[in-house]
Amino acid sequence: MDLIAFATGLVSLALVYGLLAIGLNLQFGFAGVINFGYVAFFAAGAFASAIVTLPAPGTEAYLDASARYQIGLGLPVWSGFLAAGLAGGLLALFIGAVSARLATHYLAVATFAMAEVVRSVLGNETWLTRGEFGISNVPQPLGEVFAPESYALFYLALTAVVVGLIFAALRHLGEAPFGRLLRAIKDDELSARVLGKRTARAKLRALAIGGAVGGVAGALWTHSLGVIHVGQFVPIVTFQVWLAMLMGGTGNHWGAMLGAFVLVAIREGTRFVGEVPGLDQIAASNPSFLPSLRFVLIGLLLIAVVRFFPGGLLPERRRRAPATPGTSPASPAPARPVAPDAPALEVISLRKRFGGLAAVDNANFAIRRGSITGLIGPNGAGKSTMIDLLSGVQRPDSGTIRLAGEEITGLAPEQIADRGLGRTFQTPRLYPSMTVWENLMVAGMPQPNETLRAGFLRSGAHREAEVQAALRADTVLTELEVPHMRDELAGTLSGGQRKLLSLGRLMMRDPPVMLLDEPAAGVNRRLAGDLFDRITKLNRQGTTFLIVEHEMQLVMRYCDHVIVMHQGRVLAEGTPAEVRANADVIEAYLGGAVA
Ligand code: ADP
Ligand code: MG
Image (cartoon, rainbow, N blue to C red; front, side, top):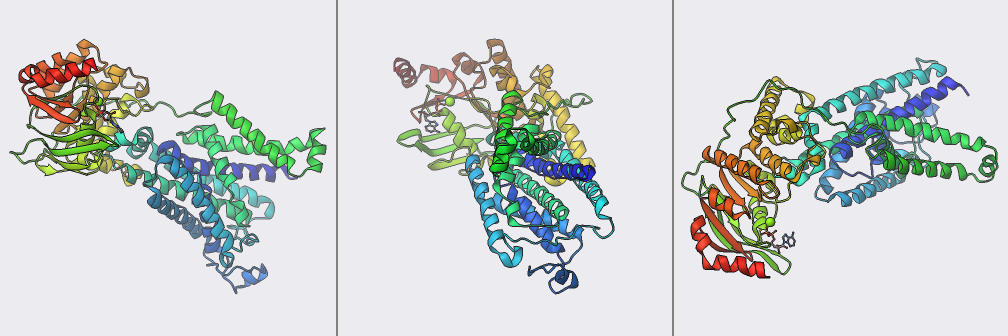
């Protein structure tokens, strides 16, 4: 065998697998979308490109090849590549649109099923694809210009250019605010939604781009072989792409590309097993021995990689924050909703049941604009559920919620966030695999900066907005007195630091109403005092607070109004002193303590 042709063929193959791996990496490694049907995009692209470029039926080239397909458009190969990208992207959009509401693990099953449907359609529509027989005269670009022996080299160069360009584009996208948003969604989608992020839209975009990349890989593949048949697009292709990405490094395109090369090397390496003395006889007498052995070896390798290199051979690296010119003293004043007489928040006859349990049971109250209102009550009183209802994380069974006079009942978390409500969670929900700085940046980045378009083409306005957000992030870090934590991964912070960062993320957005669920729990006494001083300062600048707090001393000192919940109902409300003297409240707390 010609060694050069053999080697160029392998490198081409590795590049195509690498392209598939980075496409999947955008979907899973960045956006966290589990796609077990990735081969469908590969197939869609391959067939689209083949059909677009095949010589039209009846033409000389068609007759020469004694072909039997019924549709060939005879267009140039570059239009085939375009069609392949479109086919992959549109298929991904379709899958995403019909399954967007599915939770992650259902999506895995749905995508797997989708790939099987695509394969069965391609197998059955023989007028288009010739099914199992396939089509053997798929045009090879510039095939007539190059001598057969140098064609492989030419095609390798072509593949390298196409893959290189897409690789560069995906890297660029991954480092843009769009990519950062995707990583945030992967870490914690709900926590991105309560910061106003349109996560469904961003995931759909990532799915589509990943699909288009898979489609182009299909075109590269089919034109290099010159032959296409449905048997090339079996589920095992998907698993090999997953393997390449997991081995190489999820969330790191360099890793995914490396993984593809390792995968191809192993696949080829196992070919030589048949020549090992002893094994050669088994291989000769049992034709399925070598292919099976190959998968066993690949499987073992995957186990080893996952065990010893959990993040892959080239794991995702911690991204250090760029140096910023300083801090911005003045926070950008967001537009605050105007309805001067309306309370900041109003709750009317609100109810929420979990099975037989009424977590919130006909609650009524109003929160005065500009106040710091405490929400207290024994464990299980329904305080966190109340915050969930107010922020759209849970839908109430009945009742009405108004934010600055406007009804927000039943709106999605991101819509409520846009209307000026921010919240933290009792157990902080951060983006653990991202740094403190990145956590802040995701929160502070305005929507126009996080679009796909802005990810590709960063205009001057986009850059300016990024600089502003970065300045603000440094300001927030300084105000919280933790500038040294800038490049720490959020997942490594202590409980108290996480609470601080949750508040910091809200400060990046500076919403007029903030709901804080036990902001000082787990924070040491001094820091808790600092935290409430900070809250008081923000309050003086106009922010309204609703704070769930257990530490009565803090409530007495910092709140100007207190609402007491008990068994889902509002038991009492008033000034801290009034509430403390209330017999029902004392009874509820003592009753709770005794129980
Ligand atoms: P609090 O924050 O005041 O301690 P919660 O609002 O967390 O109370 O909980 C109120 C009640 O609702 C508790 O009995 C709790 O077990 C129940 N609960 C809260 N969330 C859920 C849920 N998602 N599913 C079922 N029960 C829940
Ligand atoms: Mg709670």
